Length: 337
Image 1 (cartoon, rainbow, N blue to C red):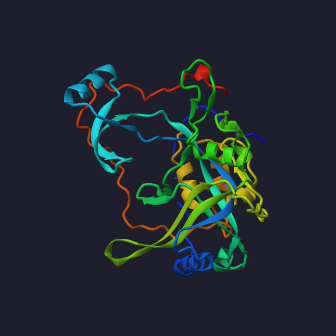
Image 2: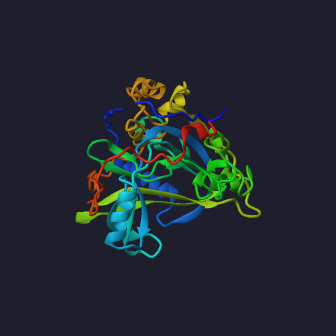
Image 3: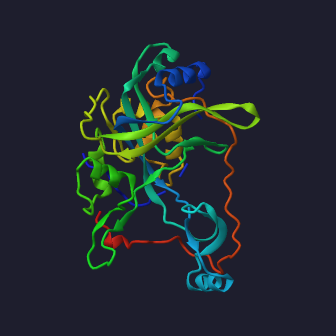
């Protein structure tokens, strides 16, 4: 089954309360995982979940010019604005050129670690040991949407032919799924890897950096925190682990297995609800049909309401004169799907 890519269509979110002792559940996960410090572990991609069409943060580029140069850039493109920021390479203050981005289809990626079996089910009335599952992209709490995915993985394609003499549409070579495809030897470096093929990543094993711990916050409080990051291919001599769970592909506009939908964590579902094409989608109907069922397979920790994220726009020091639609990097007629 290929992953379904599609275009933008249309938007919308009460979650069932539980009597679960979250402190005990969190401590069980931490004690069982033994990952209070970051370690490199072998895990396999256990879930790829379509999050629908998601709003994208504005692109930011370090800008070396002066005020006159900024005015000239704004004159060229009314979408451009400038602000003070941080150069991510040097970690020093820098002037940033900003540009709105087109909404993109995005996904969430889950990784299972079969060497670490946790029993969340016992806290919901029935023992059900399963491998530790971590979701890439992090998560944080917002007042409007609850716990959401921190960094959804956008499926933006680019032309790998930098000279633009040919059309080699692909995920960018620095995209995590492209790196995984190369690491799994599905493609060779510089070959194309399209979003339609990302289901081939399911079940593939890689090395990941992982951590599960209580993060210190303000006021002496601590918050249950999970961290995961892709490291690379398995090393020489490392064995591919047995798949103790069935990898799942959750699509937005197709009927998915009900048991797979029931496994989705709240922060993933809440992110889905932020999609511009959530209303009327097949996944909305399935999620709402499942919402009254007890979820003991992949229930997450209680939301860490450390500091609700305020959804505010950066101060635009240099404002564009006219507002125009967001950037269209690629003409739809040129896309390969």
